[in-house]
Amino acid sequence: MTRRKKTQRNQSPKSTVPAKKDDAKLSHAISQDILERLPDETRIAIIEAESFKGPLPPPSLFGNYEEILPGSAERILTLAEKEQSHRQNWEMDALTAQKSDVRRGQWMGFGLGMTALIVALLCAYFGFPIVAAASISTVLAGIITAFLKGRSNTGSDE
Image (cartoon, rainbow, N blue to C red; front, side, top):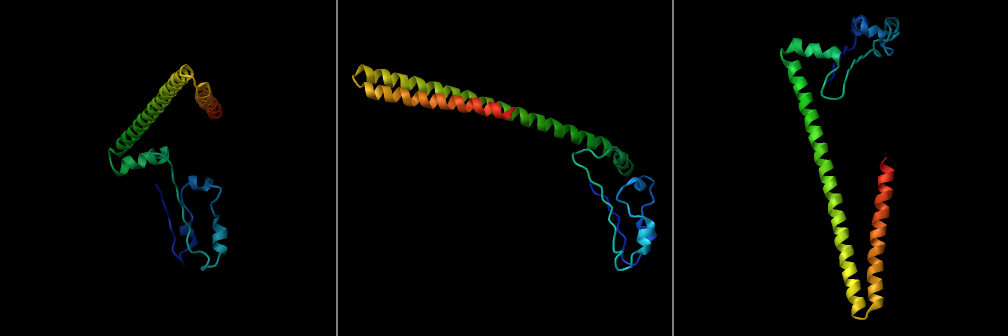
């Protein structure tokens, strides 16, 4: 949300200074005597802006919503609660999908390892020891590499 105040060219400098007591605390406020010394061509506009992030306005503005539209404060709180619930559900779904991916990868690795072991045993039984050794060593190298990469990735996330 943004609140703006503008002064048009050639207006008196007194109308450009905010009248609120809280605005005097702002470190970037322009003093009255500096404005009076500026030529009219330089004194084009002063813009005051406020903004906030997230679904809830700051407490200083929250009451203004209720004054302008009765019931709006409750609607804003409901909106924030729904947003938080949606975010938590989305994160839970993402974690469930990630866990499923890890489990699937483990089962695929197990299947690949068992297949390679069976192929190596069959090759050794039928008299192809070099093919058996190549088969089992290739698959073992892949499994060890995947295991070490998985270990290094979990260490860098923390």
